[in-house]
Structures are given as C-alpha cells and as structure tokens.
Amino acid sequence: MARIGYIRVSTVAQNTDRQEDAMSQLGVDKLYIEKVSGKNANRPELKKMLEFIREGDTVVVSEISRLARSTKDLLTIIDTLQEKKVGFVSMKESIDTTTAQGRFILTIFGALSELEREYILSRQKEGIDAAKARGKHLGRPAMAFPTNFEQIYHAWKTSEITPTEAAKRLGIKRPTLYLMAQRWESTAT
Image 1 (cartoon, one colour):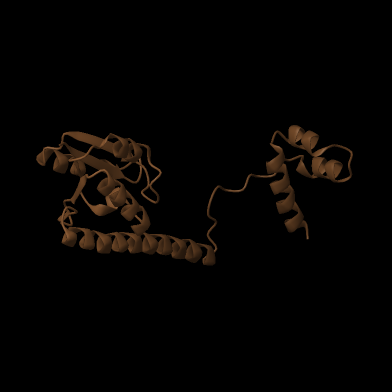
Image 2 (cartoon, rainbow, N blue to C red):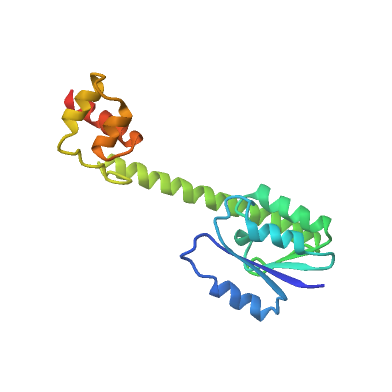
C-alpha cells in the first residue's frame, strides 16, 4: 500500500517545488512529475503512474487541476483508480474518494476546473482580438522583400522559371515564396 504522488505544471518554465514540498510532508513513496499542459489526459508520466499503481495504493495530488483540467478526463482517471481499487486524495480540496461524499465533491471540483480552463481560453482569445482591433500584428514579423523580388516574381509569373527556381534564386523556401507573392499582389493593387 503505497502513497503515489502526481505533480504537474503546465510549462517547462514553471517549477514544481511547492508541490514537491507538499508531497514530502505527506511521506509520499513515489513521485511522478511532468511539465505539460493538463488540457487532456495524454501525458507520459500520468500514463506511467496509472500503469504502476496497485490495489490498496493511494494517489495524492496537491489540487485537482494538477490531475485533470476537464471533468471528463478527471472522471475517467478516477474510474481507472476505482477499478484498480486505488484511493485518491487531493490536498487543497480535502477530498478522499474512499467516501461517497468525497466522490461527489470531486465531481463538483472537476466541473469547476473545466470552467476555469474555459475562462482562461476565453480571456486569451479576447486579448488577441483586442490587440488585432488596435492594429497590432501578432506572430512573426513579415519577411522583407529581397531587392530582386520584383524581377524574379515577374519571371515566375510569366512562366520563364518554376516556383522552385524562383524560391532558390531568392534564397527562400517555396511556401515563403507563395506568402510573399500574396503580400506583393495585395500591395500592388
């Protein structure tokens, strides 16, 4: 009967110290740590943990959102734990799935985690839309036209050379040639 800790942060830049300290205080026997988004359950360390756990073990997380960000994924993971007769404890929410009340509370918190993720995505989209409305260019800056672009563009468009040859002469790849040609054509009209 082991206590298995699962730690997750969303990006490589984030650190896991806070979660590791909490797991250490609880005397967790084995840790699975990963730095990847929780948007779905397709995570290598989560899969390893689910394969490792045995009947009588308890999986411990610092908070539900570390295990799953969608109610569906959370309930699927919890079902897997229950099938293997493994308990689940979330420290922040004080949930213990060995009780009916704990399972009920877990479902509610899972729904709240999913709602929080949807809010984050919505705010991100609103921010991008607002930046675009103010005329801000998002993404990589457009590549400057080479000095000989007009000459090579004309040779390509009059079928004197192939797109591959045009890209080669300009020192760019064909997809970049097509993008530059679109920009050129939109500014020429």
